Image (cartoon, rainbow, N blue to C red; front, top):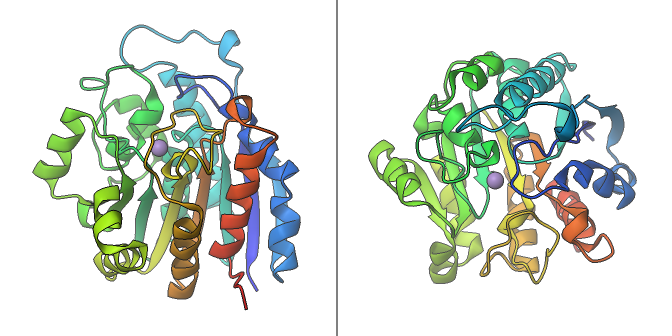
Length: 297
Ligand SMILES: [Mn+2]
């Protein structure tokens, strides 16, 4: 039994398309809390972090849209997660993927005596910087920021030293900008793409990911719903064809549970505006159940 603490971050300031701010509500309405509690876990909902409405804040000049507001929100997320009881398992409900800047920083500060690795499950690499981003949207930048690259306001807001490259693994990639490709190559980031899944199967790719993170003590799983195929999960801000199928995603989650090493989680980029009848949040809740121990038998 685990002490799961849900924290909503209704933020769409980092996204290009509006609506992911409703993702936390969508996950709650899809019965995330009850579903995890039925597995025998203690579940507490901490409510939402306060996030400014996009229309109420200046988006700022240039290349990091809403940088100040996002830095402020992520600092609050980090402090909240860091302050949870030692045994708590934070589950942060986005919101756009920029919230991971706060949740990962919080997870690292939550367990300072342990080395935390990050499994970034996403169609995109999120390794842009203000210099390379085509859009200036911060949800394309959080992993670069966590690795110590990009807008200083946002890096400082997290209150952590940059992650080590070898402590990060990307899984599910299929839409990578040229400069992100260069980043992955130059820094030697472990990146497992959909081609790897096609070739070797999700079971083997998951084993590879866990093996690459065998040296860390605990795992932060940052799950972007756009890793799923749009046929499975249409309600995401940035859909890309050719993603994980329903069972592939479940096997991934079941395997992560079996590793016994998951200590914190993000569930991000669910966009109810683009969804059909909250189907995508429902799928993500089912996947969260697998991640926290539901099995078929
Ligand atoms: Mn992402």
